[in-house]
Image 1 (tube, rainbow, N blue to C red):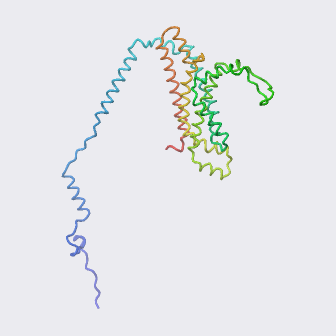
Image 2 (cartoon, helix red, strand yellow; image 1 turned 180 degrees about the vertical axis):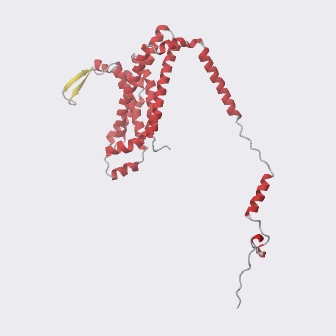
Image 3 (tube, helix red, strand yellow; image 1 turned 135 degrees about the horizontal axis):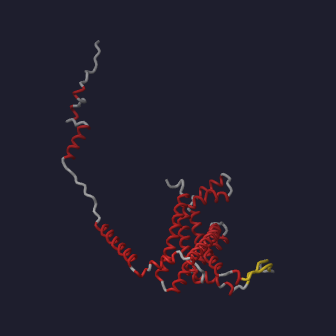
Length: 315
């Protein structure tokens, strides 16, 4: 009995074909070549998208900016020599320092009270939630100028403040006429007004942190105060900082409203100076440029503080 095997395969003959399968299809390489040849027979021209209205808007804006800058430089009504003489005048620099002090005091006291109010609103006690909600509702509803004038005239309602046993005898008292002066009333009004907005900013930031992290920390036995300090607040700062910075900048510009109480801040001092020499426009530009410069500094500080708290979240 003889042994048989398949006949040898010729490599140049190509793959074997089945007669019953019909005409054979070209191999994949041949198909790709045929497709490439067909695509090469037609040349496509790429035309960039045109935006005529965008260019028209750019041209119109550039013309308006050029006209504004030309008027800013060539118009003698700006009186830039008067501006340069008073920009660094001692009275103006002292007024800038008063403005910065009001901003710092109002911000520190306002956010300190705002944090307390925020956690009162997050408390499980209905009484604390109601008190915090009532405070926020009242101080956000009353205009700031009304609050300032109220605290400035506190002596009309209370001639003295007595400290002692509630509804009982007092131990010592303060004369409100000497205790609450113009500057004290301004700081008190700005801080209490700021606290209402700071409370909502802090509360929103705390609520933005996933509750599961606090639950996991509690399961590990971490004390609640440490949870807030090391876990919740560092993450909440990413949500708190942008809104808080906006409020601080608004407070910085809002200090101009204390001029109604004759406090020597920047805007009031500028009014005093142009009331004497009649140079209204250049003196207003002095105040404007100082506000722009200090607001820019605050914005730069905001950028670096936000970048610090964004570590690990932004890559």
